[in-house]
Image (cartoon, rainbow over all chains, first blue to last red):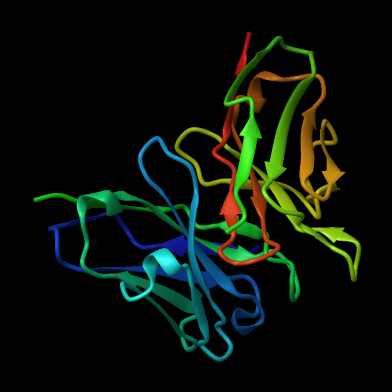
Amino acid sequence: QVQLVQSGAEAKKPGTSVKVSCKTSGYTFTTYYIHWVRQAPGQGLEWMGVIDPSGGSTNYAQKFQGRVTMTRDTSTSTVYMELSSLRSEDTAVYYCAKRGGSSGSNWFDPWGQGTLVTVSS
Amino acid sequence: DIVMTQSPDSLAVSLGERATINCKSSQSVLYRSNNKNYLAWYQQKSGQPPKLLIYWASTRESGVSDRFSGSGSGTDFTLTISALQAEDVAVYYCHQYYSTPYTFGQGTKLEIK
């Protein structure tokens, strides 16, 4: 079955960077885009961006432009999300999620289990 | 950006009764060339990632109970849960995937009365 398994929780200082991994299995890695969504404690869902694992092209939300980098490793079917210049407001659970269907079908299914990133001095 | 607004923010319904959650988009998410609404619904239980319930506004995901149904078109959408069960306690989100940045409603917390 399709699975997305994320790396473990991270505690970071303000101004540093974090890199979260999302290892996929159960389907052809290059066929489906992977999205990143975050959720601050007790808050709603916020889309950060998407990567096409086939060619590596990305589309980031304007809010995160210049601070986020999404990459992939086709040899391990893994996608990475790096967020730099961290501040306390970046404290959140970060999720990766697979595009649900073919081109244009950009609902998210399934989701990874989430990675808690805590930013504190 | 397309703003998604859900109502109500929270809802308490008796077991076996119907729950209705509304979602309104600031602009149409209906793509006229294929007549599809680019709208999904998710259920998020405490401490878990969201789970897809509905896509294309009304297509139920495989394995999802038929007590869940989606309706609406253009800018106004509804998620209906018939015959509420205890396991339905969760936060529900609508999501537009019509254009980037993809956006979500603020969530509706569903509880048992």
